[in-house]
Image (cartoon, rainbow, N blue to C red):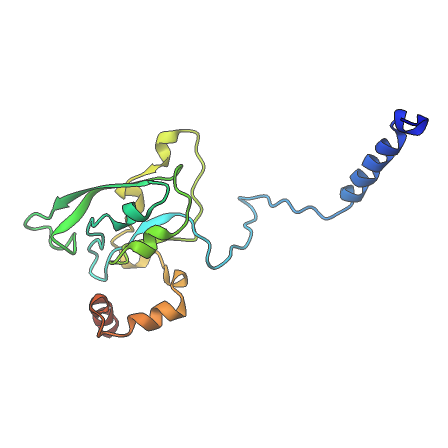
Amino acid sequence: MTFKERIYLPAILGGLRITLRHFFKKKVTVCYPEQIRPFAPVYRGYHVLKRDENGAERCTACGLCAVACPAEAITMVASERKKGEEALYREEKYASVYEINMLRCIFCGLCEEACPKEAIFLTDRIVKADYKRNEFIYGKDKLVEPIEKDKRIDVSVRQTPAVLEFKKHSEYAHNKVYTKSLKA
């Protein structure tokens, strides 16, 4: 090594130059609760289990979302609907237990693509931070949207124009319920 390299002066001056260059640049840090950065329209965040227009849960506990989940974050227990619960659940079978482990979830959106009843969606809300692992097991108490229509969560931004156009065709069996709700 040369004398100049041994005293590390060029390395120290290079480091100071980089530090001074960044010292006078505009900061990119966002102070989160006060400022919220804009999200992309396709951002996938907090999950929601949707209700139909009558307030009944759409999920029929078919298990396709759990099978499609690559992280195996979704678990459910299916139960039969009892007499008098017709207003609560759409079909004869429903998910009595529906849990998503948010620590395992990779927010890929495959669960909402696999759902034939359009029961589960990923919203644009951020999953809250916590210090306890148990708080990240989201059950139906956190996932199912409220019955009141004014408190429902809008997921229309998650559906592309091509998907909405496809749903208008009532000749497809899985679109019959959707087109009836559009006419009502």
